[in-house]
Length: 373
Image (tube, rainbow, N blue to C red):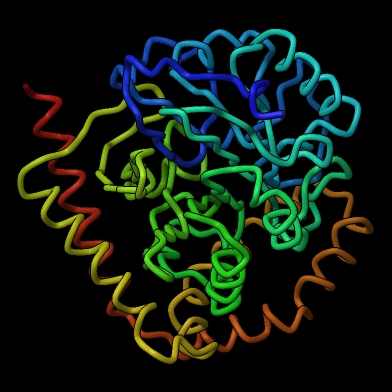
């Protein structure tokens, strides 16, 4: 079995590089990521030449001519388990998977029930990378489920030297920097089951990280290359995280920051790097403080998630029809979790938001000054 694993070039580098959300638009085909990085990311879009009305406020569609950029970005594996791959419907998704596998055979597309994990060999080590999606209305029938990860880890653990998980999870919001208490619980369960690291995405901004039993858990790496209408309203969606994991006898990892605008990437330095590092440590220390209780999380995430979701529902109601949208909105409104977040919105603490907006302003200045050079 192990002899069948795809083998990466050992003469380049012995590390994997985990990044976040990615839309392979033709506009970012010229982007060159540093040579020697074996990238693992999340391809978050529906690839279809005939998009449909999915009922979403912000569907993400790409044409089939976007296959070429994927090849140029040094990916070895891309997760498909996310909430946008079914935006064009079931048939379009099936065609998308077939097209990706046939058109880009050197990239593994995982996070599916029939391919829940990518398998690679690097530095004579056998590695599995599991993709999954949390429970949500957009979870299509072929996607691998978050609930099944622990069992899969236990099943395959003895066949691999390393097992990583790349979940698409948590509340989406461009200033939602903290994972929920049950995300932390899930992370602990996966590490206990045998995972060597967890590198999440979905919030479109970086979130705090921690070590569990000496293993890295990055709850969200933010955006890699993600040119999206809503994200352009928030400068911090341009600040991404990448985590390099060295495949050696004992895993070594480090992270760095970059700026992306949907078409290019540049590593940051100087004062902005120091401020980004300080902010990441701040939000990471927040979640490591015991207890990271439900009410603390609600006060942090509620002020971002509730207004953002209200704006999205307004768009859905405008597109209609009303009789289809209203029942969905009503069910969403009454969800216990959303009631807790709505309470958190009214009981909010402004500290993190203020610090985030300060980082926003530094980022804008950095981009403005850089454009003059």
